[in-house]
Length: 106
Image (cartoon, rainbow, N blue to C red; front, side, top):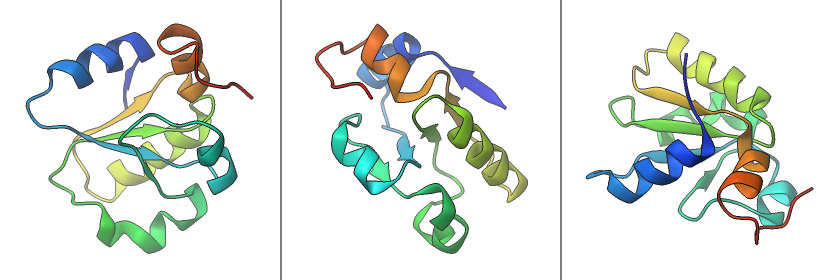
């Protein structure tokens, strides 16, 4: 599974010709607390039932709090034939520390 650090993701989002799907797999209350602008919230336990919302040909970057849940979902997507999946290393917590310190942490 590919991974990307928070600073790498920031740079990538600023320069990407086509924006990837930022799949935030945290629970709705976590997402409401803080999230990366433009991300889509599909909680981890609902991803299997909502696969039709994720186009297999699109680039998907998975996000959670520290990278564990999103890593599991990235592996799940890869096992279902999604080819362009990357996990945000360190999750939203790394994003708040390394990219956007104004974002609330938990």
